[in-house]
Length: 179
Image 1 (cartoon, one colour):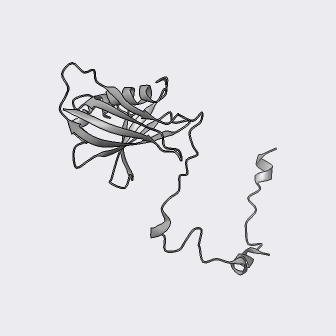
Image 2 (tube, one colour):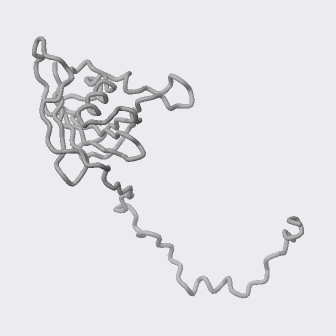
Image 3 (cartoon, helix red, strand yellow):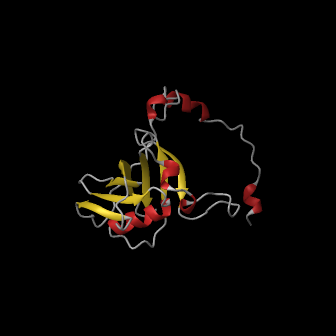
């Protein structure tokens, strides 16, 4: 079977590529297809992230094993596309170049029969030109569960007066140790 994906750059402009790839190809093969389709040189580190239906990032699948114990962490080459994606699980996030944070929303659009003799992976459609720089990313925590609000500690200016004029701190003579 052939998986057809729409790979969308997370940016204000509409920039996406439609890519066809075999279901038995690995995430590393898909990584190669994505960076080629968008014109990257492939010299940067990348990761895929599983996510839920609303694109909330979950588990990382890195290009290289970065774990403390070699071989303990599974990498892109260890996963076939069909291991992670199917009719029920259609979304995954791809991040290329962790300095610039090129972030892509990847969605499985169709699963079709393979066309005999057709080369895979291949870019089926290209829309929009890549900007010179990745857009700014905002890493903010979701505060809806915080009942106190940001930085709320129930202290005000009057509470800080308790420290004024307090001479109860013992002098440990640290100045003597620096001579």
